[in-house]
Length: 408
Length: 137
Image (cartoon, rainbow over all chains, first blue to last red; front, top):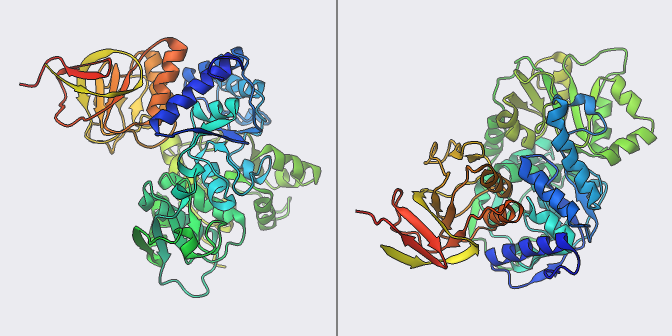
């Protein structure tokens, strides 16, 4: 492939993979059977030049390849507050990836819709929440790929044989033990976000094992945990004892070895970690509510809709934005749920995410979210103030127009 | 003039004043591609400018988007002339190789011992050697 018998693009991609492999001391390459590309978000001219070079060189992905979000909602372009000249390169970047044969999924949660890898499957994935979900919740195998190299893996079907592709580096290294929680600990969304934040900031580059989590109410809670851990830190794989597939027992999680370190997580730690996400006090007026980071699954929609009053009765006082993916949108439409959703004042966003690109009407106010990831990144990316809360708190607050907490 | 052997991860020859960072730096969120300045508020070298320097640091850090940011600084001419690391960094290596392939701009990345190097004196990277052209006084 290096010699160019598969075309210029494949040869270029293979050169980069070999250089990457040398940098990580990988002795060989291995086959991957899926890829997820985090290259559709426009950072600068170099991103577009790179993909155009691959298109011009006859590049074609060799494995099923999904795409992460771009900067434009191609289905609802009216939501994007960028001028046409500003949108042009961002749009072209998304389209150019399609010309390479990538599936236009434009979602950070492909694992819940378009392409869900199997346990043990070797894949090359980009985007931090997708990586941690694939490794941890499914037991598929990928390193943290991104920027250029994820696309190179897709164009060649190969990846360096190192790190989380192999058995040994997947074993747990540091134990996070939930201590002092009530025996009947409720599986609230907040608990998973809080634990994720704590694990991410303390794990550094070690594989964390979490002991004492209650069984999650849904895989969306593990999605939220992973997204938070990959925001506050760079976690690519976690094990939750008795929950995730490579950790039926504590001993399995550590491969029979002893933890290199033990960190206790107490109720007050979780409360503090969540409190630090909010930059304003309860009662503060809101300008918007943002849900769906990572992209809202069908199950999350089914939780949201019963929380909303009937249309024609009350409308939310501030916009409720929900990021979701095309496949879920299509299913909602097929089930004739979409009109109901819009009638209740929900703004549906696809292909992108409200913390990445100018969508919100106002960036000078306070936004409430149920996402640890949104709360972590939005103040830096957008300049907004942020409040974190449970899904039902976010909905109640949107109708009140200020931050309220509902006792349930 | 003193020289030390280094291992080359991205090819090229370069010369420039040494800029030694006390801690690893993530180019993404850490460097403004328009100016080449360090913008990471938590980094001890906040405000330093990497443009045209031989950037010396213990390693890379953080987001894989650092590949894009390094390549973008090289495209704009705000990037370092070369990079010396104590440990290899695949993210920066890929960024340098992309800039070379797309724009013909080389930014050699070498790995070797960095102890004793200080900011200011000119460094020269070529052929597996890192040479201090103008030794410290």
